[in-house]
Length: 340
Image (cartoon, rainbow, N blue to C red; front, side, top):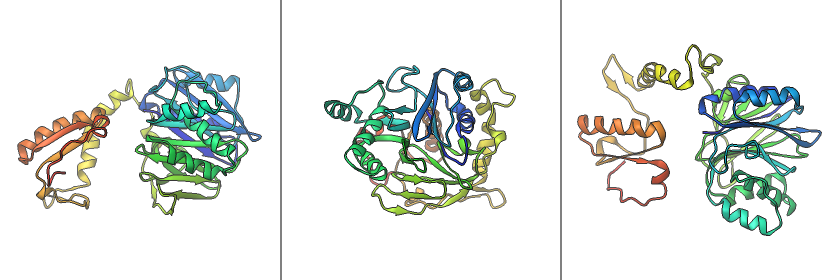
């Protein structure tokens, strides 16, 4: 699971981007990189392996610039090498990406036929060249990003930086979370609140299909139809103390031992011990009327769903199906009437 951070700041951003990437280490990764705008030009440093390798690279080859993007990569398309590490750039556009571009082969073939040369095996590089191609057609940066988002398919979060555009970066969310952080004369983008916890606690969580254009002093969110929308600003409760491994040997061990407290906090939001009642969030359906339940999840959430299946079937008498999300979205399963 990749990690993303972007900063449009008042002074040098590379150290703060690196700190944000450290706060995303819990996601796992095999390479990392940072790109900044220096006198309008894109400069980049990348490294295979742990973040200490990138930190050492930056110590020897510092990155200036008050606009930048960073990324920790978990390889999907393309082996885990420095060449395949993000950010990807053609010199005009730089992109970091979490997720999968499903139609990248089709787009890559079209762009290659136009003479565009690809340097990596990744699907992300398609976004770089697609934005550049639209810019070459005379579109503004905003128009080029919008056209790109309408062209690509998949589940992803993107942050896009354009050479010469010193006062703007773009972000997009489709199926993968992305948060906007609000600062004083600065703006931020991150995969989650953890990535931005050292920068701000004022966050806007992009909704499905949203994309954002950020300057140092403004944030404009647009929906999947390119209509301007206003999303709620929330205060994050994430603190720096939650970031590291603490006294644990690794993040997995930490997460295992944190489970009782996390489960307790989650249940506390819905259970009233005094009245012994449960209040669920408002939903467009009633669990009381459900005829069957389908749980769609990935990774450890899938295994949690399998456990929940036994509990729900035993105690609620409600039939449950559990599906892997990456498979479910490509199937057309016959869902029962009244199912949830």
